[in-house]
Amino acid sequence: MSEPRVLVTAFPPFSEFDTNVSQSVLNRLEAEGVQDLDIVTWLLSVDEDGSRAVANQIRKGMQVDGILHLGLAARRKSISLERTARNEFSMNEPDNSGRLLDSGEIVRGAPETILTTAPVHVMDEEFEHDEHICWSEDAGGYVCNETIYRTLYAMQDREESPLPALFVHLPPEDEIPLDAQVEAVRRIATRLVCRPTYEVVGGLLFDAEDRILACRRPQGDAWAGWWEFPGGKIEAGEKPKSALIRELIEEIGVSTHPKFMVEKISHEYDDRLVKLQIWDCGEIDPDSIRLVEHDEARWLSAAELLDVKWLPADLPIIERWKREGIPRA
Image (tube, rainbow, N blue to C red; front, side, top):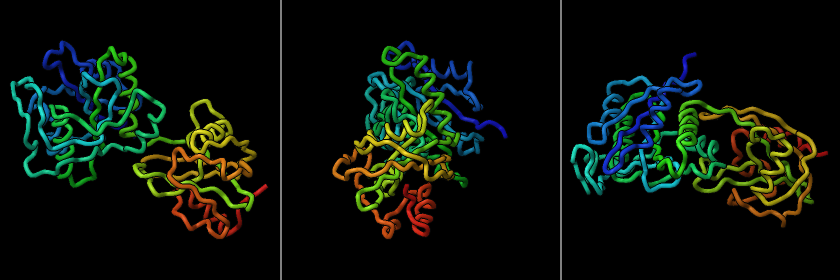
């Protein structure tokens, strides 16, 4: 199987800047590559032609598996993943062609905003512990925003499903060193097109009436409104029991002692493969729960197991327990 091909673009210096960190990162990717990816690099001009370049190639049937635009955000301190592109010019200074547009639509009559086609949930999982990488809702009003807007708009005419495309604003090197930014972009490019495998552990928690705890994902989450066992990813180097103890403290504020694994199952989502373990953690006091990651919790009896909408990875377990009973030591 051939390696996924990712187009990565960047910009040269503009305005009063002598360098552009996005170009520096692009040069490193071109020289060093990204493991398991076929990286194609383009340096775009900081003007209307540059903003149209990728969109024009999309309409001509460009053969790539993902598109990653990079640009400098001189006043930011974090690496910003842009969730939204706006159909609006708001330039505070001319681009490199001398064009200055402080208002008006980028594409007349087109949608006011277009969301990134990148796998948001996968990016959330990848960077949940990286404080210097975050989502942004403001791609600005300069050529960066114009570029990602034109790219996303061009994909609406494709007969195939949209390519995953994302704009990433990079801070100056004195905020985050170049080596760290290059490594972050490598990870972003990989998660843009490669479906990850996550080892996940969940807690089977009981109350005094032998009911089990289910937690609901909050609004804004990719699976908002769905229910799950509390728990989370097993980080590199962690044992499942240690990961579950950590996750339950972080998610529901409860310290437990996992006893034994009661279930193990794999589930393929569209954007990732989940290998799930469920561990019996015994009985806890419901009053000790403090929800941090969820917006609601319920205690379910054996008869009530299917009263909530379980995540697809959890549902086969719940359906079997509904038939056979909840396992208990």
